[in-house]
Every structure is written in structure tokens, then in C-alpha cells.
Image (tube, rainbow, N blue to C red; front, side):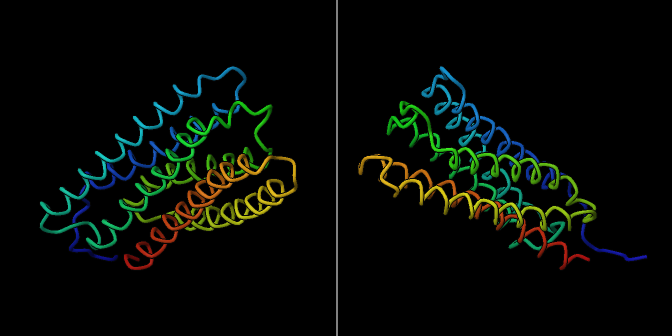
Length: 208
């Protein structure tokens, strides 16, 4: 039986779980933008509220790191995981804000590939939220990071097809520039989810 001198400090795992649950709320809000007659300003404002809550969680995590003598795993890894979860939320908020500020939801329809990217993010968010509580035991996590990386590949494919669509001549030049910025934030969010999964893998390997 393996013996560890590290404590199982529950507060860290709770903060990681709360941060990941906010990511699910974020992707659910982005999915609302596809609904007919949606109040885009309201969705954007609610995304900003979720992002602010995530910032508070991140600050609590950093404060906890600095006030805890012995952490459940390496301080650098705790800091990195918290920072990466916050990065994902920042990208999700940016997508909602850009869609609203640029008036892109007033188009007859958003590109199908954009919705596919949001669906990938929704799956990644739910996987991440399910995985965070399992950090405490460091068990049954391999499937999470493998699937999250696979989904990131799906996101890359959807992103490339979205670029093909944008530069096909279907949209005017100004709309293309606006939509490209949104596409880049979506792709960055997919990448950020993968970075979270890779960090969980690194932590698990170190602690096993």
C-alpha cells in the first residue's frame, strides 16, 4: 500500500470543480445563441458574470496556495491547472462578447461549423467538470484526457472547415474579419481545454 505525506486538502479540489462547472455554464450560454429570438445582450452579460465568478475562484485558489503549508500536489501544478481553467473561461466569454458587439447573430444564420465548434467545447466542458472531482483519488482519469484530446482534434477540423466557409465568398469582407476573430477564440478555447487535460495527465503521472 502506497503511503503519502501529502494531505488530501479538500478545498483545492472543490475550487477546481467549481471552476470546471462554470465552464459548463459558459458553453451552455454559447449554445443559447443558436436559439431563435435569443436576447444576445443578456447571454453576453451572463457570460461576463460567469467569467467574473471564475476570476474569484482563481483568486481564492491562489490565496489558498499561499496560505497552505503542504499542498496535496505540487504548488506549480495547482497554480497551472487553476490558471488554465481560467484561460478557457476567458475565451468563452470573448466569443459571446464578440458575437454580440459585432452584431453577428443578426446574420440570417451563423455558419454550421461555428455551431460544431461550440458543441465540441460543450463536450469538453462536461468531461472536464466530471473529471475534476476525481483528482482527489487520482483514479479513472486516463479516459478523460484521451477523449479531451480527441475532441480537440474534432475542434481543429471544424475550425479549418469554418475558415474554408468564411473565405468561400459567401460573406462580405468585413463579416469575414469579424467571424474570423470569433473562430480564433473558439479554437483557442478548444486548445485551452486540451492544455487542462494534459496538465491533469502530468499531475496524475507524478502522483501515481
